Length: 219
Length: 219
Image (cartoon, rainbow over all chains, first blue to last red; front, side, top):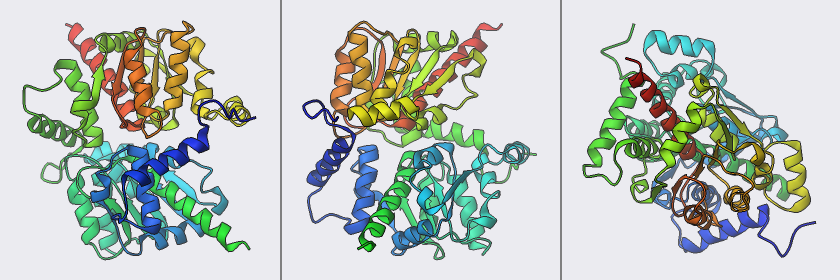
């Protein structure tokens, strides 16, 4: 019983939104194919067209992310906002799990005792299980820095890092370091911008791409 | 045991971030006093200085928000992201509660049956308890439109509406309507931009202001 004469329904709003973005970013676009699907979704989340100049994909990022998701990987997030932004249902068909350790008692204790951020201490709770998984960072440069320490020491190797901390102290620097390290595929936003909603959106867009591929494979 | 020679700790990062924003937005600023405390915090969350031109406060908004919070009001949010972004602890000293009804069974059923968004159906779950409370919208223009229908019909009167839906279909229009209605104080972001993180940040900044006032009142 859709109200066809009333305001647009949920799926129509989404379709219309994406077509507006398509129209406002005429071809040739700085991103194509699956990359555009992801960046367009990020613009949809933020209404920020500056992302066209800031988003950066490692060449293997999308395939690595799709592979990890369809294998039912672990996703670790730096904030509860990223975790709820991803939502439980989108990834359940592949039995992926999403964990956020920012509120763990041990994390709170270490943060107080050592004067480090909780986001950084939370990395240590999950690094030894994140090989082949995805680390999704939407807030804390210190989480990305700690993760890169562990990656560069050979102590962990996620399939993909969605590295989108936001802010004024070390956010841009942490993302430059993510781009310069040669060990793990990444999707990032250069400079100060980022955020939990954008990081979650990348995962939701990847889940959408994974679902599309399954539908194409079924004859 | 703070590591004083190492990287900056959590509280130092925050202080440094806010001082960078202060320095990059020299006086005279478009916002002063408590308004600047809130907008500066929003810039801290998003690294988006365009907010300087987009944030709009109803003249009674901050006092109405502080009054509602310190009376232990109900806060209703349109997304789980706003709810977890606010966090449980900041408001607990005043016994405020934060509710999000987007996942309620009845909301899902009505959304499917009537072809409306879940965010809009969720407004109907809480409107008759939101008088004197705060409605916090970080995502859905349809939630803000539905809330304004009820406000304009005299069916509810929140103390404050934090109206920051984001997007390309009716987001800007819903916020223009919020500014033009004369019944409830608001804090909004004009145009397409908005988001759950920004909406949650406004509440967290208000909670910080409320805490400061208490500390000033204790001799």
